[in-house]
Image (cartoon, rainbow, N blue to C red; front, top):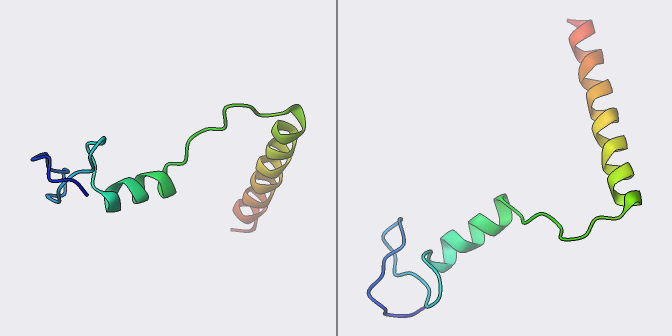
Length: 65
């Protein structure tokens, strides 16, 4: 950490080249991962299949209620 006088929104000292502290930067990266810069057609198809299967399971649960 750097004592640059800047504070993170949580009140801790911010990192040298960032506006967040190390803890807030970690949480930001874990819970909001960056989108991949390059995504192949196979990866997009696999993601679409996962979403379709998830939606199919959701519909079955709604029908059972």
